[in-house]
Length: 76
Image 1 (cartoon, helix red, strand yellow):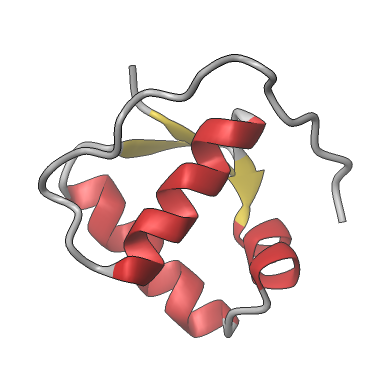
Image 2 (cartoon, one colour; image 1 turned 45 degrees about the vertical axis):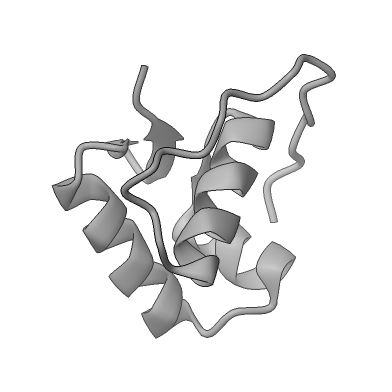
């Protein structure tokens, strides 16, 4: 697992279009760490990888995250 640096800065509010608790969790993790791979999310959040990939796909299609290589990062 990739070592993550958590931010000490205040996080932006969760986008209003996020209604799924799991989607919110993944989004907040990406915001707090600055990005993560699907495997990192799977391990850190104890979620099945298929669920993580589905959530990331949904967040990507909503324009909330983007993929940079293997790492998913929150969109500015």
